[in-house]
Image (cartoon, rainbow, N blue to C red; front, side, top):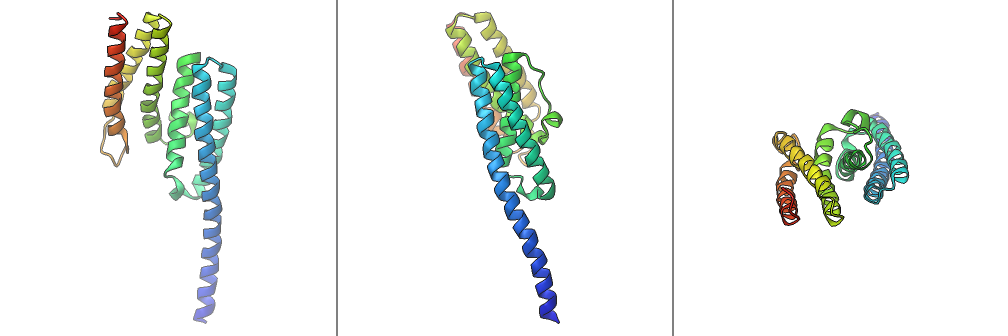
Length: 195
């Protein structure tokens, strides 16, 4: 009797573990695809290839929707590459909005948790530095200064969100890195005669 009951329970557990394993494998694959796609969005945006960037962004959004479906069944799979994928999605949305005047999507619209949205925006400041340097190289000093002003504003907003590490993991380190990026960018602007 005991053996039969244990067998029944273990068979149920085995089925659930098998489903979780398949979900985990799919989540890892989807996460890597989102990370790659968002990298393409950023790269294409820097090259001013709007149509292709928007297309890749749409594909990434579809993958995020798939991720969310799996995570509803297995929320414990939200770690590692999944968080990185969500951050990359937020970063890509900022870069698209920056280059192409596309409406900026919020965390709800992107379908990602707020903490990853915040850390993704922090990462986008580094991409803005690339934009400033590009404008400086082309002699577009006013445009470079405008992007720098956005960078400073984002830093101030993110700094106010510096809650304990358990609430927004990794944000403190990102904010420290942003301070350095801002200082370097300000120095570049100074050397170019801006300000």
